[in-house]
Amino acid sequence: MGYLNFSSGAADAAAWRAASELFAGFEPPEADGTVVERADTASRVATVLRQELDRLTQNDSAFRDNRQAATVIELVFEQLLPAYRQFHGDLLEHQPPGALERPFFIMAAAQAVLATGGPWENAGPQLIDQAITRLNDYLGWRPVAVLENGQLSEPYPHERVRPLPLFVAGAGTAHGRFARLVDRAINILQEAPADLLRQADFEPGLLNELAIDPRAFDFLHPAASRPNYLFGLWDPSLIDDDGCYRRLVIQQSTLEGILSWPEMHGAEIPSAELREESAAVLAGVMLMASGLSGRGPGAPQAGMPLAELLPRIATYRDSFYRWLMTRLPAAHRARLETEAATLRQPFGGVRRHINVLLASRRARQVESVTLASVLARLGRSEAAERLAGLVPAASARTLARITSR
Image: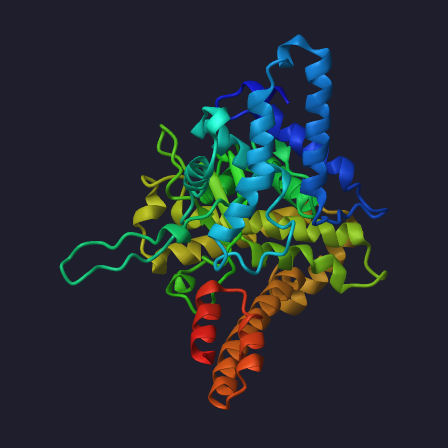
């Protein structure tokens, strides 16, 4: 509460950690440790914040002037979050209620409002617009068109989004369904041998933020043809004074595939072993994402041809997985060694599961877009619109809707 009332928008890891703990109070883990995210948690958190502010105003002289905190709570929960969804109505249409309104994203929104600043008495739509612009700080890797006059085209403002933070240095892992997976993956990387991390040019201490791209992965977009783009990348626009990337962004579809691995098995395999395999593969995905670009624009990887870079990534990835297998209990290691001999790759079960899941999503996207076009030509506009709405990717969904009309 002190952050909301007195801060001018500087980063505060303690405030982010407190927001995560507040969400955890409304979403306690199930008996098996899984977390079910609720669509109404953000509104319940807002209610608690208002109640706590009222209590502090009556009992703490430091909060007698509570105008900033009261206004920021109102702006963030009642105006900015709905306005953000409206601003990205096409790009983030596939995100269900509550999926964006997670603890660290809400803190990023509050930080944007505080950094935009008052006067709080006259806060209105202009402040919300400025906060959204400040919040949308990520574009990712995107082929930029070159016009006939030789000038580079500017990205469309609605292409920029705020990645959903899962981990922030100093604040830890954000409460939610990915928390246990992310926390274990980061611990694995912190324990990994320095020589393996050096091959990926990955330094755990440089990871200031791990986030997911909330945009649906478009399998037909030119950006998808970039090797390893499906897994993630360092944010090329967030570079520190030493020339190092600080925010790693991974694809939501990939992370959801990794998370779903334990659900694919019954009681014959201990769930703890399956969760460990998921965390291992997430750690490997982060290393592959890092190895593609290196720790910064000046890294040797930035100038390497793909023909040389990709075999290097595959080599250290498999070395990393083999090292992980040596650290597992004997029974778990024996099962994975048998699996690796059958599938010809370490941790082959979960890796194949992710590839199958992503291939299935690609097939559904192509199928829905094509069928929507066919139904539109047959005059079945309602059915075509229904199929178009099933496409998560904004560009493919928009194309399907244009065709269906």
